[in-house]
Image 1 (cartoon, helix red, strand yellow):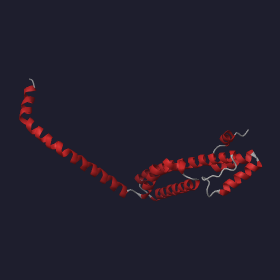
Image 2 (image 1 turned 180 degrees about the vertical axis):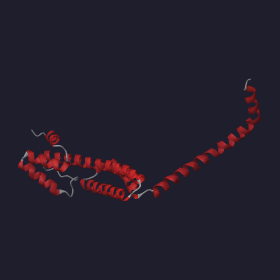
Image 3 (image 1 turned 30 degrees about the horizontal axis):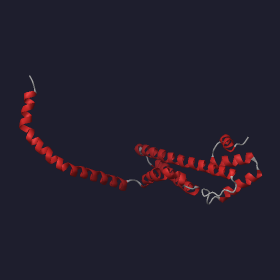
Image 4 (image 1 turned 30 degrees about the vertical axis):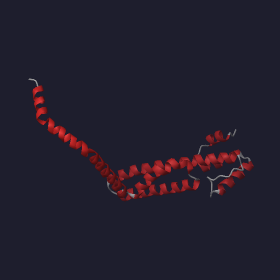
Length: 191
């Protein structure tokens, strides 16, 4: 049996109502879309309000601080490193206090995020330190805005440069940046 007559009969019977309904729906659709957007926005605001302060701080670091790492000076980077270390310490203390497995798993994921952030900050400090020390190595009269407030580091490094003892310079740079001695030798062209 063919279903075509059945379909044509339904179209004749209900077609005008469907067209009429679709026209009214088309008029109301923009209003419904605006309303759904308003609901989404209010849910996002509620989510932000109810968010844990440490999670807000992590999002702030990831969205605003990390993209601007190159523009930060050493004291700002060290402050961020201290703050991230403190948050990791707090999470670990919470883990020790919590007996529920679910909390420990959630906190473990949170620690991983904070440790990733800490690794990025530490790497940036090491790289920027090495860049500034290289600038001072090539141009001893260079004044560094990056090392503002860390004059003792610069003075010690300049003393080592005046002594012209390559091993002491390499040891100092390795201690300050954590970068391997071989890489420092390559970067500074020590023989």
